[in-house]
View 1: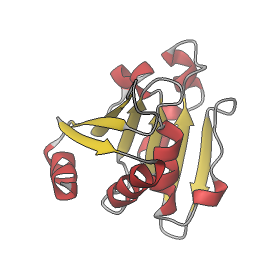
View 2: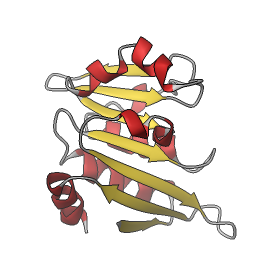
View 3: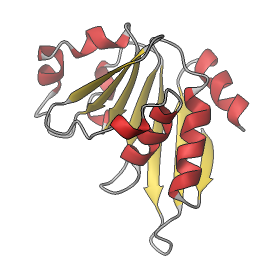
Length: 152
């Protein structure tokens, strides 16, 4: 496991931007954390790599937002409202994974059905400092571990 400490939203977005620059089609990012932890800000940083930061909206009610660039599709999921994994299957969720980069807020809800390599990022808020976040980063493959190592 790797740790990143962010002292501001800008640092969070910069870290996510650097990670995005190393991602490939088929990569999956699971974001885990309480409400207000910074999952959407992290996603904004990822999307900024493809100049999509101004288009971000939370897919809480739609479950997935699709962003298409010239070179890659990015799928931003929010699975918080799913009652079970069958709902994810019903929207064809697994089919997205091979066609682009997937970012999944509340990713721990469907972690057991993720068939491919992924990076799990758990974001922890600091009780005493509203701007401080700790990112616990767990890649589950050698390639993704190498991606994370490059960031540190």
